[in-house]
Length: 144
Image: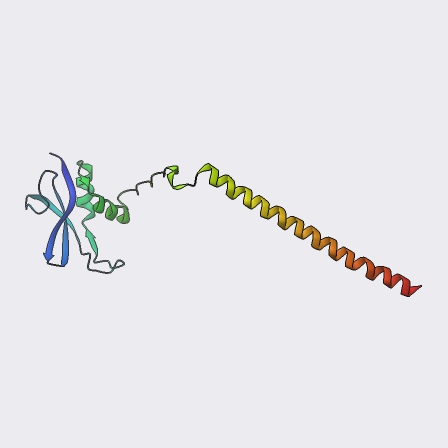
C-alpha cells in the first residue's frame, strides 16, 4: 500500500481548515478512509502564528520511516519543522539570457563608454596640469 501524508479539507465555504492525514494514495482527498491524523493546518491564521501549522512530530517521523511520502505542501511544513531538507532549486536554462549578438553589443558599448571616460579623465588631468604650469611660471617671474 502506497501511503501519503497530505491535506484533507474541512471547514466552511471560504473558511478552509485542513487536517494533515496519512492515507492510501489511491483514496480521494476527503474520502474518510484515513489511517491517522498527524496534524492540522489553518491557512486563515497569520503566517507567523504558531497555530497555523500543528504537527505531531513523533507520529510524522514514524510514518516517514515506514515509507509514507509527503505531498508538496506537507513537505514544506516538514522543512519548516526541521524534519526534511529543502529541495534544491533547479538550474535554469539559458533561454532567459540575451543572444550572443546582443551580449556582444552590450559589451562593446560598455568598452566604448569606459574608453571615453578614460579619455575624459586624461584630458581633465592635462588641463589641470596646464593650468598649474602657467601659475608656477608666473610665480617665478614675479619672484625675479
